[in-house]
Structures are given as C-alpha cells and as structure tokens.
Length: 113
Length: 295
Image 1: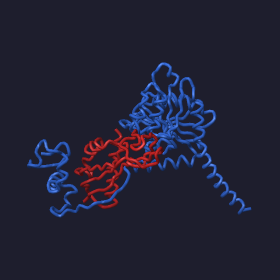
Image 2 (image 1 turned 180 degrees about the vertical axis):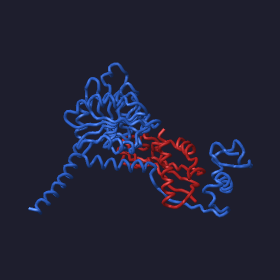
Image 3 (image 1 turned 90 degrees about the vertical axis):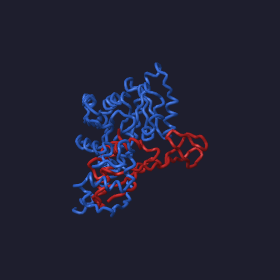
Image 4 (image 1 turned 45 degrees about the horizontal axis):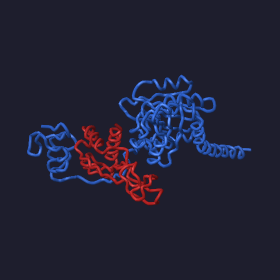
C-alpha cells in the first residue's frame, strides 16, 4: 500500500510549507493525480483520512484533480489522449505510444489559515 | 458527539451532524466547519481564530508528492556517480527468482569486479544471508509493513555498506510488482524480472512497473517446454507498455542467457566509468598543475 507512504509525503509537505509560509491549519488540499500515475485516488483519500488526525490537516478537505493521460504515437506521429498505459493509439491503432503526460502526482494548492 | 470517521467534533448533535451523514459534506460548509473546530480544538490552534473573520488564504504549492523521495534519490545518485558505481534496482513479484538470479550473478561477477547487494524484504534476513554466503557484502533492509524500498532507506544502506569505487550495487526491491514502480532509489536502471511460470499478461496487468523498467528479464526459460507461456505474446505486451524495453531471456539455474545479462551490465557501466575517468583526470591535472607551480 504505497499510497500510505505517498500520503505521509503529502503531510510532510504541508508541515514544511506551514513553517515556510506561516500558516497553522490547512482547510483544503488540492492534489493533481494523473490518470496514468502510480496511485489510486480512492486509496489516497482513504489514507489521508486515516493519518491526518492530530496534524495541521486534521479537518482538511481533500480535492483530487485528475489530469488526463497523454501520449505520443510513434506510428502516426501524433499527440493523443490515452486512459490506460496499455491503450493503443485511438487514431491509427498503433501500439508504440510514449507517455507524455498524466503521470503526475502533485500538491497543487492549499487553502490555509 | 464526535464523529468517528472524520473526527469532526460536535459537542451537541445538530441537524447537519446526525448519524449517517455523508462525511465529505461538512468540509464544504465553512459555517459548520468553524463551529465544529472550535469545539474540537478549543485549546489548540483554533484559539487564534476570530469567528466570522476568516483568515483563510490560498497558497500555490505545485510540488511533487514524491519530492522528498526524489531529493534523497538525487543525493544517492550523486554519491554513486562520485564513486563510479552502477546501481541496478531489481523489481518483480515474489517468487520470480530474483534472489537466485542475484546469487548466481554476484558469484559469477565477483572475480572480475566489486559487487555488493542491498536486500529489501518486509521481514527476515534470509536473502542477505544467501548473498553473504557467496562471499559478497550484503545488507538487509526490512521495511516492516512497508511495501517498497525508498531512496532514504537505500541511502542509509549504501553508506553503511562502504561501497567500493567503480563497483556494481544490486538493490533487490521488495517482491511487489506495484508499489516500487514510483520510487526512484537513485539507480541507473530498474530491471524487472518476470518468470515464465507467471502469466505472460503481467506487463498489461502491472503496467507501471514495466513502464518504469529499462530491461525485462524473462527468467526460468529452462522450464518453457513444460509450460504454455507464450514468450512472443509477453514481449508484445511489454513493448505495448514500454516500446523501448530491452528483453533478456535467461535461466538463473541452468545459466542459459546469463552472458547477455552480464554483457548488458558491463555496457551499462561504461558511461559511468567514462564520466568518473574524466573527473579523476581533471583532479589529477589540478594536482599536476600544483606540482608544476612548486617546481
């Protein structure tokens, strides 16, 4: 369950940011989780709710923004939209796709006080 | 009554905080939120809050969740580059034959180059013991409940091992085809091992790992005559996920195909050694310049 390790990473990031940007509580966290990233958003949400007690994010809401999977098709030389890593090119059906986006896992923004 | 799911503390039950409510909703209601927090954190940070005057502000962050791991990985990578060490991160399901392949590999390579091993498992030192039995230094990292090695663990282990210059360090990750995919350890490459006693569709089932790996080792090929494993199909699936993935077919027990594996390791070392040679020459030139200055 690597989502737990990732969630701990999120909390650590919040704590460091709290010290650097002078806030005490986090009310809302926006995460950007790409469709092709290595994390399941629901598991991330579960972990966040499990470990936030007693932290500055104790009652923070979690917003997960899914960013679309993107790839470059080496067969038809086009940038295309993919949903899974094993997708074929939606245009030409080719299998030689290189992922170009949608694999990010990022803390985008916070609402703090 | 305090909600046991999200921990929002309500001293008295109100309409919006009855049992069976949707636990997500209260986070969206700022008015309830303030009220609930005052009760819950009466002596804590909420004491500074002025009711009705929200101090909330938005802060742009834009940082990778794996940023901390990646920072440790960058440190590791620098340490390895300075010492000219090739580091390979071996990943697979449990039972693919990683440890057997590693034992055979270090036994074969130790005569011509310095090798060391970091073993990752949840518990036991069985694997490190097996490696040490070959006469090669090995260190076991037990992750406890953890499902993967991270760069911080590997950094500590690498420093503890006191690695030789220009050596090869194998990191055997926790047997898990999912979690280790996203964690950069500072390695030169991830090597994914799939044995032919597993399903040939694993590259499609666990795409993240095959996308992250530079090489796919197909292990236990001596068993192919007894199995219905379709090598061609497996490779096609792997290339669908990662068109650039390199295939090495071998059997760690029969020894068939090991030369290709060792050849790849040697090839992978070359740019690292070349870079180190340049750095050492620059150092040597600086020393010589000083020598000339005094003469």
